[in-house]
Image (cartoon, rainbow, N blue to C red; front, side, top):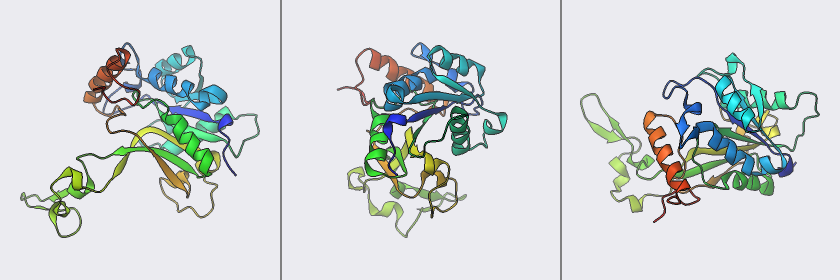
Length: 260
């Protein structure tokens, strides 16, 4: 069954707790709460235009921001809001709460967004939903190049200072120029679009595991390097604030990269 983008549901996850950056979803970035930037992106996407946008949170301040911006709020229970809770459990709870009293739609795309990602390329949500619906795959995640943190340049460092390759027999795979590294990508947190069937673990033949809700046919969309800012450390707040202010002043392109 092919997903129907007209029924897309954007679920923004924004729990109160954070060990790295307490209160990060409410942090002031370029004059606005952090989560407001993700709500903007969701409302500008296919979910906002022809579907629905909701925020799942246990934070009263985040809930107030969401309500003031006209999006639905799902009260996230404490059991799904600690640092052991999984993304898919929280997303399933939000979907079921939003569907209360309605007949579930098996072809519904569910767009999972993080409230602590205030900087993402314009249109990336629609690109992910578009690939999901055009190909009939189970999930689409956004990626960007790993850059200089390439897996081939990962090493093991012993307690005595000895250095060895992470894998294989040759340190750095014998490559010393970044230009000679094979393309490699890492999930960047900008967007994850899944079918409702995949999210609810209804795809046959999927091996159990933390990413089982991605389904079997997993695909990706590419973002430019440095175009996403995920708030995980205090320094990320400084970077995000600078990018958002530069973007407002016309110094950052729509991809999120600084203009030349």
